[in-house]
Image (cartoon, rainbow, N blue to C red; front, side, top):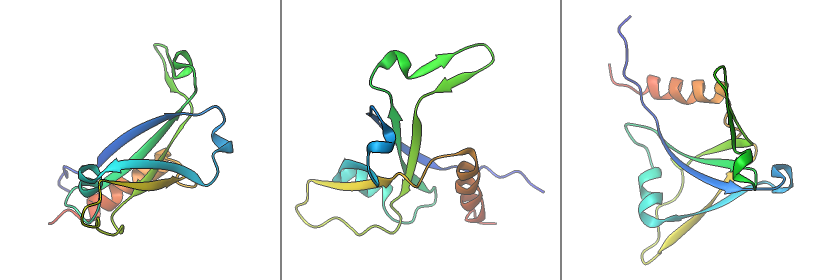
Length: 121
C-alpha cells in the first residue's frame, strides 16, 4: 500500500479559563471575515478551528520533562465546513466551539482518517 501525504489544517486559538466545566455549552470565538473564509467550506486540506483552554496562570500551562510534555487544560475543535457564507459588509463572525468536541487522540485519528478518505487516487 503506497504512503499518503495526508494533511489537516488547524487554526488554533487559546483562552484562559479558571474552571473549564463552568463555561457552559462552548467557547465563543470571534473570527475576522478572512479567518472565517479560510476555515469555512469544503477544502482539499480539511480545516478546523481549535480552542485550547489554559489555566489563568501561564506557569501552569505546561510541564516539560525528559519523558513527557504535559499541557493543561484541554482543547476543543470545530469544523466550519457546513457553516453559511459571510453576509456582505460583515466585519467578523462569532462561532461557538462546543465543549462536547473535546480534541482527543481518537478524534485526531478520525480527522486524519477523514482527510485520507478524501485524497484522490
